[in-house]
Length: 630
Ligand SMILES: Nc1ncnc2c1ncn2[C@@H]1O[C@H](COP(=O)(O)OP(=O)(O)OP(=O)(O)O)[C@@H](O)[C@H]1O
Image (cartoon, rainbow, N blue to C red):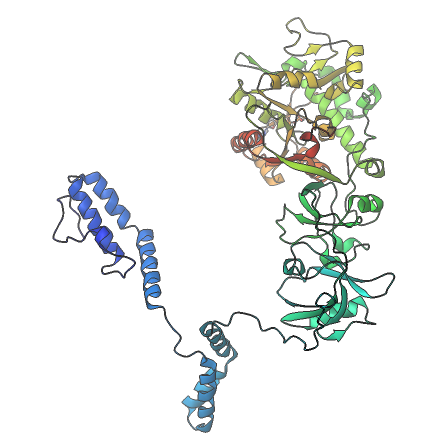
């Protein structure tokens, strides 16, 4: 059809004159065409608008949508009725008739076709729809239902592909079989007819007296569509707990299959460290019921209670021990330890070392000074990072787990525009690009992002200003600050102490800016406070192959005179350390970003930082409850 902007043609139907619901006298696309023609008239032939409208009308998707719409309309008008409600009966009759005339090959083939299981299934489906027979057929109720309804209850549950959602046990005193627990959200719970403590009398008409719980389970498994229970209701139903819903972040992995203590493995809930669990039932002191929000589990499952976990903490089903150890060295590194961290090669070339201000990026960029990027600061951090990661892997878990709850209570927190910004913490293996990304972030908007000025015991150089490159303090002052936990992290490099203080961070946050720091993962607990509400971003290396490709021209910061390029073993170590960090500290990371192509990573980081400040995230409940210590 050709379109002109010359005004209406001969057709005079108006869109609003066509009654769509009373049956389409013309089809919908014709109707729209007429409307567009009318518009052409009123738009005085505006060709551009008309072309747009015609283009739209002729798009494939709109045409398809209109076809669907019209088909549905036709269906609604016709309201098709089944020709006969029992096609399978007719099929049987035809098959019988064909049996009597078996001479012809065609008849035999037709009989074979009609008898095929898929054809029979098709007819059965047709009959179900034709008869609108969607309800399951329940077995008839027994005749001998006692008059006192509460004395005995008959419950018939229709099975589906999900488990029943209840466990049974033998009562310790009476020896009778009782419902041990009803799993929240499961079939039994949704029926509202089974309760913990109900005594089981019969299953599918078979008395359970003398049967073992396992035999009863088998009995239930045998019934196909439904299962019928005869029960003596529990006299005192436990009142459904009115506690507020509790959310926790487990600090361990848990797999019911490896827990010999769980009352029913099938009812157990698997979770990983760092998942978010919604605790829906705490009535049992040993086994709670929870849903895994992270894996979107619909039905609750059993998880060990806090007390149970603490009791079990040394048993083999702990797939990972919790890595944060209170015994981690909080004292300052001794010179001897520092010495140990240096390789032989580094010691040999010590005379050639760079002055720290000669580093590749020392904070000066186009008139803007960004503190915290000096070589000494970074190298001291790297040394303490590697030594502490080693010490945490050596240390037995018992020193920590005996004192810390295996579940951390969490809540949703969304920063309000009047709150201070959340502290942004970047974590990653050495060389992955944490400093590069931090620098790019700050340079992208220095009026919003800032890095705290570190403290050092090193004497200032002539060109340095106190409070710009560093806060220059005495060793005594530094040590006193460290002892009173005023540093988020600190370390020693070539006899001098370097550290990032809470005050320096606070100074930035108080200005309404976003403070960005990098931390070694062992120091994250120092920063996880109600005041700072840190958002922790893990910078992960890509695959070794991608590292080889992307880091071909990159330089690794060293003690040497020249920062050298990455060697194969550097890349491998980066991967290994990254795995370890994720393994030990993954549950503390709010976000993981793979640093593959630098510009992409920078964009992702920027988005993550914005989300941290404006979207809700799970945080420790202690950060939000005024009566809890944080
Ligand atoms: N995605 C990337 N592609 C290419 N080069 C990169 C990428 N990310 C970082 N680099 C480069 O890799 C080198 C090391 O990065 P950077 O100094 O930021 O590491 P780091 O994680 O801060 O290490 P450290 O903790 O040891 O100081 C730098 O030369 C940096 O420019």
